[in-house]
Image (cartoon, rainbow, N blue to C red; front, side):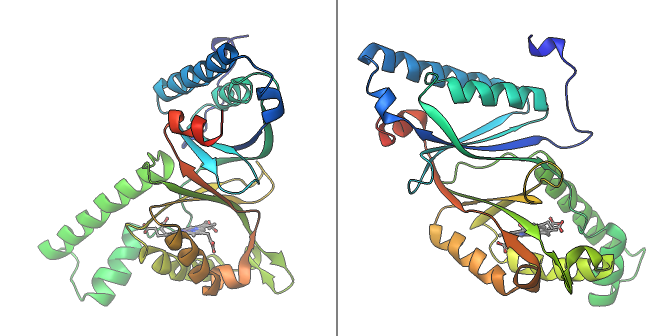
Length: 275
Ligand code: 76R
């Protein structure tokens, strides 16, 4: 059945996101003739081109550091039917026994519950902090700038286009729900205040870390997938370390496994993976 015949599963807003990790079976690969190896790599290359030519669809490809996995993909696309189709095809692209999944994660891009609203920005920053008066040209200009910035930011959160920065870090995380450390029994105001502290730390990494937080409550084991892109692995280590001291992480965060990869063009990736 082709995708035209099934009902699309497109969220009301945002995209589906899959993180896919595989091992390469080199024993099976060694049984291929040179011609079969060439054909297999061509199949994967053509599939990658097809995926990347699909509207609103992005595919990041990376080699994984350490033998936790060999190869990773991050696929972003609106329709879960399409994501599922591509995911199955990627698994089989090098031949039925070459790639075996070692870990995977399903999430969706989402807007943040804690993003500052224009009303909050006006009251807390423009009036209380900067002493501006509502209705003055200065106030209106600052508010318009804020709205522009937020529109741009929301667009990035829901429909991200990720840069080709070499280092990629992925890990899933949840907010704790135990005893007196239950994030979900805090009031909205308390959570918003804590998240403001978190964001303040995060903003100091602007230009060095590009983060994408995707929601997975009800979709996968943890509540969020954290994807960090960097040009220097030291920045990844530093931000994760620094955030451990921030109350949101120190008290309320639980983490899954960490994966570190390097984004590479396919020809270099094939050589890296000894294919
Ligand atoms: O409105 C916004 O999106 C900006 C403020 C912001 C929110 C709401 C923000 C900023 N984050 C938000 C939400 Mn974040 N973030 C993480 C991790 O390892 C750890 O300890 C935690 C993993 C990192 C490294 C990180 C980085 N953030 C979230 C959420 C959802 C929480 C919820 O809804 O309850 C999670 C799980 C999470 C986790 N965060 C930033 C960063 C960085 C670098 C920023 C600044 C971004 C910028 O301003 O450019």
